[in-house]
Amino acid sequence: MADDMKVLIMCGGKGTRLREETAVKPKPMVEIGGKPILWHIMHIYSRFGYKDFVLPLGYKGDVIKQYFADYHRKHSDFTVDLKTGAITTDKSDIEDWRVTLCDTGEETLKGARLKRVARHIDTDRFMVTYGDGVSDIDLDALVRFHKESGCIGTFTGVRMPSRFGTVRTDESGKILSWEEKPVLNEYINCGFFVFKREFLDYLSEDESCDLEKEPLQRLAKEGQLSMYPHPGKWQCMDTLRDNMLLNQLWNSGKAFWTGEK
Image (cartoon, rainbow, N blue to C red; front, side, top):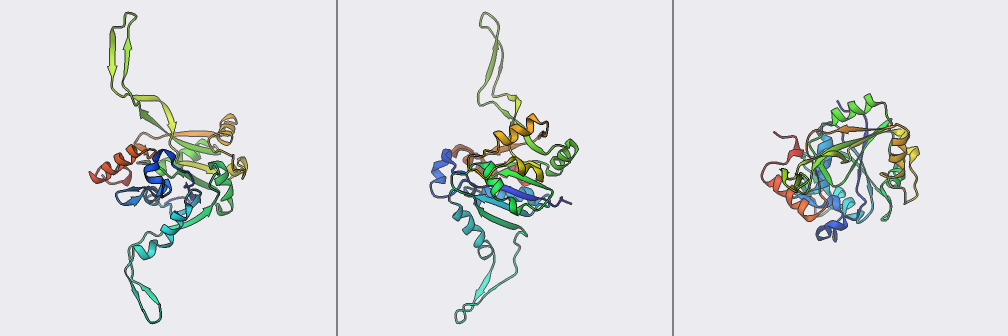
């Protein structure tokens, strides 16, 4: 049974490195298998029982608002009485999600976006993730780790393969080893955060408040930030190439983030 936590998904960025798609839609609405990546991310949380979402909006936020405003109609059969204008919706298998959509400014950075939706966070802890990455993360394990750490904040770290092959040589230049795109020893932040509510005090509504800079750096200095090491897979959708890869995985039945074996 999932804890009672709101899930905040960052939906305000401009996605400038994905201009082929984001010229007409916000990045979270770019599709994988005919569904926005935002829908895929929400399903990751929903599988673990988290169904109460808050979406801080920015660039082309109206596209996301319209998507959810029309969601029930688009995914249901319905009957229209043309004389009265009454619409009767047939029962349909629609996700039992609650979605709060909040305008937080087009130029606002992520820390300020969180602070500007603080009134919608009414739980002792809350979860945050980015609107452009999917994973096979075990959210139950993440939450356990966060609670056991005792920290105010926890982020998820993954090890990523290098974009390039690496070689080791001796002093004469003779190749000692050649490894094609090895997995790096360092972790990167892939999102999937858990915070105690008091983290909101570290944020400001000033649009220049950037989540990954002063707020998280301050948590780290105070010994209040922990990292959950995710042993599985994660993939962001930063470029058109990433989008093509995610669609290939979906179309080939290898979408690792769905929880299906």
